[in-house]
Length: 201
Image (cartoon, rainbow, N blue to C red; front, side, top):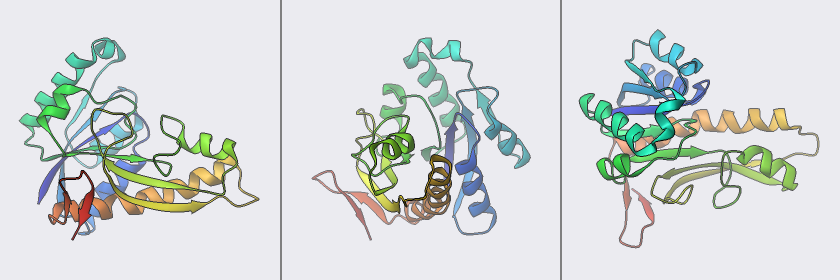
């Protein structure tokens, strides 16, 4: 069983999907700590309801990103976290975390990377008029939204979709795919080869 540290900034719906998968026996993991970049994030309420320890940082702390990440890394280490899971975390991960958890930080992105990087993947895909977007889960490295891809799932944008309906479809896929990928990691089925590509056994 692996111990997860989940980093959030908002509602925590992907955090809830992970908590539910653990509770249902579908994910061999324990959420050891939830860290929020916003003290008012609803995801903290979800964590408290599940009895999970939390840490919240005020925006002033992030004026020095290296200091903020060093604080987070210390708490993750104290919680004996094995993998760091970004679930709607709206801050760039910096050197202290990357060095402490090499190839052990995972992010979910609401588009098919390398397309539509950044904080507005769903909106950008919708506005671009593409017919297919999707969800990407990848390892995090020093380049934003460019780490090795673990899994992707396509989502069709139908003619009658509005932004809200597309968001619902994307989130529905996210909530199923993230626990599935974390289970692959928990069972040691995910590796990165010498070329930097992810291999799944």
